[in-house]
Image (cartoon, rainbow, N blue to C red; front, side):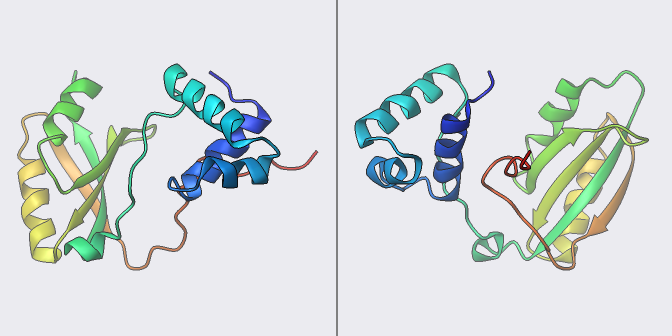
Length: 154
């Protein structure tokens, strides 16, 4: 499904603050609150919006260390095998199959470097993992939560 420009503006407003009122969003996009609600309900029903959530600063939960791990998997490992294997780790924030040499990239949050090391050892020991390559995040520079960036003019 492809969003039209108005729906896209509504989604961006909700992504910035999911607690924003329909009236407030309506003021931003030029619709009444009931019209915004109807559109949001339709976007939910069509699966364009998959839910509402809260974003928590990982350090507030004691997760002070962030890392990205490239997974190199054994031959014939399916994406579902990777997803299933990684879903057991609460430290895994996201995982994606990727192009290039690695089969997947995994974002991990841990309490400290020792905790990260233990998680990495467990993941590296999964039957589908041949090897890993990891980098620790020093300073997050840019994080966007509002969906895709605005379209360029033109």
